[in-house]
Image (cartoon, rainbow, N blue to C red; front, side, top):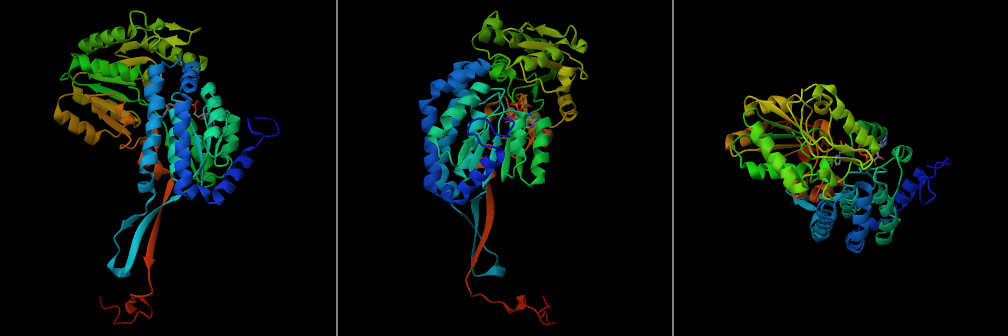
Length: 466
Ligand code: NAD
């Protein structure tokens, strides 16, 4: 940010951005179906025409493999936008609800009202999807939007700033680039909703800033996602699905990546062998050279993961991988066995290619381990045991639960995506995003008939005989 408080790009300060957006919202144009549909069509066109640029930006930011960028970011964003466009009229339609006898005759409805001026602050790990997906829902709901992409993924941030204004109404949808000072300046303004994706420490700052203006927030946070493996499983499928959910998702830098495994000590050797096998099949004998693994995003995160690996409490616990190359910012898929609970790796979210395995005598002990930690964003269980599955679904408090797979729930727009407790507040995806950015306005229509004298004072003794 410049000394004059100007934000990068348009020569505006944060106050200008919000007042410009508020004026555009005040014009009423964003309320129409036509305006919303035109913006969504613009975003689809942008995705189609700029696919190569998006792939290139993510390669620069994370050396993300093209296929992962396509499947996890471009294709999900596009289908989210196509869905919003297809369903828009239905979503916008007021929902009729029944009336009470006490207000007979009348009709009641819930009107989805745009909130107004919304701020979307996104994170670096899925820098395209996590930015554009909430924007899609915010526009569909008729809002004006400021998007602040992450400075940790600068190429994607710059790409948004360059291309988005060419495809949408730039008086209503703005990209503000920058890091802490710019975001802090934006947070001083009054917004009608803030959706933040990132870590819980900053989440608290966002909520504090929002509280000043009574602005509602959605906090899409993370945490340690547990993955439980029972002995009654298809081991080969289990290992492949764990490996792809961990290392095939941005090399573990995903909010829903399995953070640690819980299994029984008797089953652990079989699971370890199967995981090693999958890692080798996917990434070859030398994964450090694999083109199919993202790198660690930057040297700060590389150093953070290094601290987890160098913790003396896990000395001798690495049973596979562990190689790292600071210059290339690469860390190999790494398995650790029986790490103590007070080690750093079990105390904080890993967000990288390290996967510790905790062993217990009986799989039922997984519930104690999970409950001893803060509520996760995702929790995974692999089992054929229906009773265990039922108990897991019923008793584990997590943003989402997936049985016999990893991360796939994220891609289903019919499921709300969000955390609980320390892993977040609120949710989005599909219609949930539309609802997140709408106020559900209660509207009751009456005519001048249907007078009931008992309603009006004086409350005579006769009226009180009910
Ligand atoms: P990040 O460093 O990109 O930060 C996120 C955003 O916060 C950025 O736009 C950044 O500019 C802004 N920011 C950083 N410090 C700030 C401050 N002091 N004041 C105001 N704004 C600030 O991302 P991160 O935090 O490293 O992201 C990783 C975390 O996000 C992990 O915990 C992960 O689990 C979580 N995450 C959650 C989701 C989800 O959908 N729930 C998705 C991705 C990541």
